[in-house]
Length: 122
Image 1 (cartoon, rainbow, N blue to C red):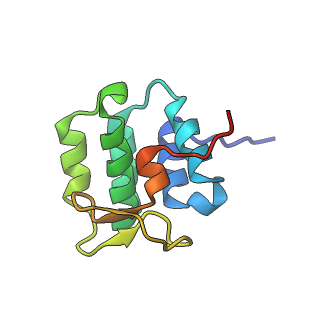
Image 2 (image 1 turned 60 degrees about the horizontal axis):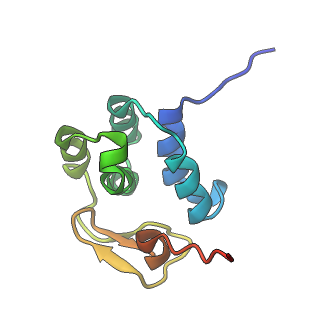
């Protein structure tokens, strides 16, 4: 039996590319934040390989939000920034709701993601 397994780097890009297949934004963010190390060169390479400007911006936004934890370098962000969308796009096409516009990435991001306001019950 052949078993194919995706790398962590590919998983990061894929869940941001197709969030509807990955659960809520809380699940996506928390899952990705639980990973201590990504090979960022591979993350950038795969994001660029997909050729989707919106996905590139999502990956760039995520990496920028986690710059210190993941030791993201300027060169990683620049490679992604150069291919971001030229017009605003939604972080989640399925949920075109108001949010905050992140001009650097040309992304409309839900407030819950920016503020990590997951509505937890304590």
